[in-house]
Amino acid sequence: MSSSVATAAEAEIWIVPFFGQGHLFPCIELCKQIASRNYKSTLIIPSHISATSIIPSSFHQYPLFEVTEIPSSSPPLPPPSPPHPHVVMHSQMLQGLRNLLSTREPESRPVCAVIDVMMGWTADVFKIFEVPIVGFFTSGACSAAVECAMWQARIQDVKPGEARLLPGLPVDMALFESDLKHRPHGPPPGGPPPLRGAPGSEKIGPPEAGDQPHWMKEVERSMALMFNTCDGLEGPFLNYLANQLGKPVWGVGPLLPEQFYKSASSMLRDHEMRTNRRSSNVTEDEIVQWLNLKSCGSVLYVSFGTEVDPTLDEYLVLANALEASNRPFILVIQGGAGRLDPLRHLDKPAEDSYFRSGLDNKVGKKGLIIDGWAPQLLILSHQSTGGFLSHCGWNSTVEAIGCRVPILAWPIRGDQHYNAKFVINHLKVGYMISDDQSKSIQKDDIVSGIEKLMSDQEIKKRAHMLRSIFNHGFPLSSVVSLNAFIGLINQKSV
Image 1: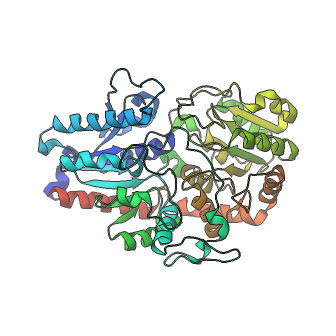
Image 2: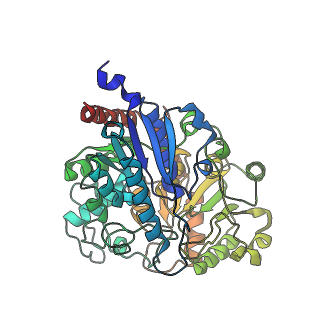
Image 3: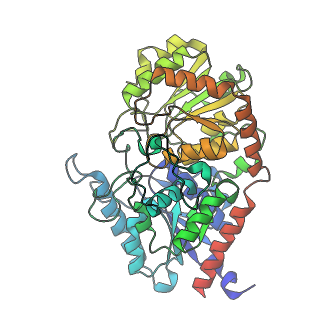
C-alpha cells in the first residue's frame, strides 16, 4: 500500500451541498461512499438546517463521516425587504467557509472540496486557500448534455414538425418545437440561489435556447465533475460531457440509501433510511394498511417533490381529474403547495390547501391524501403502486426506475423537462402529461394520461426490465468512478 493511501484517513474531503432536500440526501450518501474508502468526509451545511434534522440513524456506522455547521449571524434573516434572505445566507456561508479554512494550517485543510454546482459561488473561497474542487451534479447527465449540445449547435428555434438532431447525442433525444416551449412558471420556491455575479442577476432554471448553460461557468475551475447517475442509465450522456468538457466526468450514483440496493423485491421503509424533519397527517403504517387493500399495480402515486409545485389553479385541475378518474391514488400535498413564496414553511401542514374544501370526502377510500411529508420509497416499492405522476425531479425519477414504476411526467422547471424527455423517449418508461408544454394542463389531459399509463402493460414490462440495472446492488460503474475520484485525490496529495 502506498504512503498516500496509508494516510488517507488523515485526509479530509469536504462536500458542500445546496440547501434543498433533493440535494442534501444525495450529498449525505456521497459522504458515506467517501468515508467507506478511508477518507474523512465532512458535510458543510449552514446551521439553520441542523445536522440532527437530516442525518439518519445509520450515521454511527461511518466514523469518518462528520457534519460541520456554519453558524448564522444574529439575527439570522433580515426583515422581508431587500436584501433577499438568500443574499444574506450566501454572505454568511462565504464568511463561514473563510473562517473555517483560515483557522487551519495548510497541511490540515481539506484535500478536495466537492461542490454542488448550485453552490458554485463558493469556489472563490476554495481558490484563495488553494483547495482543489470537483463539481457535483445531484441531477442526471442527460439534462446537462442536452443543454451543452443545444449551445454547441447554436439552436435558437425548431420549426413545427421538424426533428432537430443534437450532434453527439442519441437520436431519440432529438429536439422538437414543443421542447423549446415550456409553460411559464415563476421562480422555484426557496431557490435556487443566485449564481455568479451580482446576487439575483442570473437566470433561474435552464438556459434559453442557444445560450451557454450557466453551469458551464460554474465548473470551469473544477478538476472533474460528478453526476448522480451511472453508466447503465446515462452512459452516452456522461461520455458526451467528458468529450466536450475535456475533464473527467464520473457517474457516481444513483446515490440512494444502502437499503435501496439490498432490498430488490421487498418494500422499503423510509424512516429506516432517511431522517424525516417534516410533519404529516398519516403514518407509514397507515399508508401500508391503505395500500394493502388495493390490487397489485392499481394505485397511481401523485407527488411533485419538496421543492416545486404546480400553481394553485393547476392543483384544482388535478383535483378534478383525480376525482373523475376511476383509478385509486395517493396524492401528496406539501405545505405551501401551489405558491411561489420562497419562504413557504414546508414543515407545516397545508391547512389551507384546496383539498380541505372536500376532495378527500368526494373520493372516499379511492384516494389517500397525504398532507405534508410522504414516505416516497415505501409507496413506490409497494406492489400496489402501478404508476407515478411526477414532476421528474432526478431523485424521484431514479427512485421510480429502481422501484419498477412507470412515470406520467408533469415537468415544471429546470432539468425536469429534459429528465421527462429522457424517461419517455430514451428509456421509454413513461408518457408526457401534455404534448404541448406551452399550454396549461387541462383536466382531460390528466385523465387520459392516467388511463394511458395505468393500462399500458408493455410500459410496465419495460419498467421491470430497466430495474435490472440495479439487480446486483450499487452499480459497478459507479464504484469504479468513485475509486477513480479517490485515485485522483491521491495523485494530488502526493
